[in-house]
Amino acid sequence: MNEQLRTPLTDMLNIDFPIIQAPMFLVSNTKMLIEASSSGITGCVPALNYRTIDEFRNAMIHLKSNCSGPFGVNLIVNNFNTKMKDQLDVCVNIGVDYIITSLGNPKSTIDACREKGIKVFCDVVNLEYAKKVESLGADAVIAVNNLAGGHLGPMSPEELIPLLVSNCSIPVISAGGVSNGLQLKKMLELGACGVSIGTPFIATHESHVSDDYKQAIVDYGADDIVVTDRISGSKCTIINTPYVRSIGLKANRLEKFLFKNKWLKKYFKMFRWFKGTRMFEKSAFAATYKTVWCAGPSLEGVDSIRHVSQVVTDLLAPFMREDGN
Ligand SMILES: Cc1cc2nc3c(=O)[nH]c(=O)nc-3n(C[C@H](O)[C@H](O)[C@H](O)COP(=O)(O)O)c2cc1C
Image 1 (cartoon, rainbow, N blue to C red):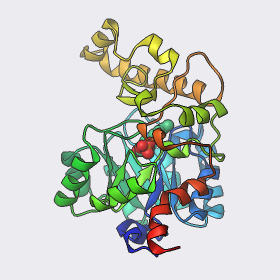
Image 2 (image 1 turned 90 degrees about the vertical axis):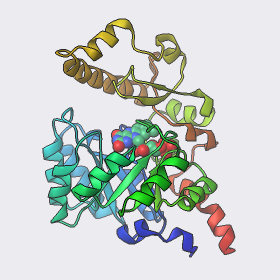
Image 3 (image 1 turned 135 degrees about the vertical axis):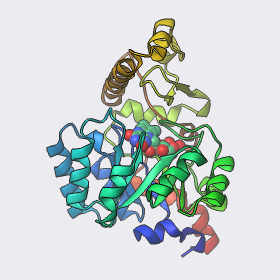
Image 4 (image 1 turned 60 degrees about the vertical axis):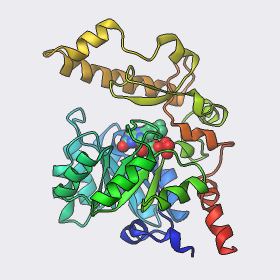
């Protein structure tokens, strides 16, 4: 076993390789998580991928009996997620292995998980927030960099990882920009104890998104990824499809007014969030001329639609060569 692959993340979760198959809205599913665990890594699914609490609970029960290793759940912990408390209760009662929190204050999640021994990893994009979640008792931070798919951060991995590693005492997991083994190696060398990888797993046989979406991950390149806040109200990476080009990336004058208005901004943000969610949903599963596909620049390294296990094998290739295996 290559020593570089044994890290605080592999020890904490008891997995073979320091890789999390990242939570992806609409994309992650139980099949992918089961395959991830039998490939020696771990997968995480957003609770919001399930419409009802019963569906979510059933998925967790299915994972509990079918995953050969640990699995995680992503909770959106801001007040747009009206099901947050019920989702957390299911996670605690079923006993998921870890939770990744995003977009809000993770305190109630950390407090509820501590006594049950469920690990909590918190998405952060800067040192200030990393110190905050560390003081709340997070088990690790997920350092979301400016190459990440979805809601990206402002800093490069070269800036963000060493900054967090030298100022925090909890492990740092890097998210963004990894689609091959050399990039994985680089993140570990920068001080990360593991990586959370999303985009490359969209183009897998186990993912349930449309064939067009998977093929787009193969066909488009890093230059085709653009950042916009027009879809969900927060900055998010999407593929620059003809439809995206037609609507433009910047908020129009009315949207800017509504985003800034003291009384209306809260409602407008919520409206945008729900409207954006619907748009992503329509594009992910069926053909529509309003195609909005979320992905990060790491799609550059995806040349074919593979099985989850093959993505993992390819990521580990440089380490195995070093081992002579
Ligand atoms: C299609 C897509 C959906 C995502 N949905 C979520 C989500 O629901 N919750 C979350 O915390 N992060 C989400 N992310 C971010 C990922 O968890 C992860 O941080 C990111 O994919 C890492 O960058 P990469 O795509 O370059 O691997 C999403 C990313 C993508 C590409």
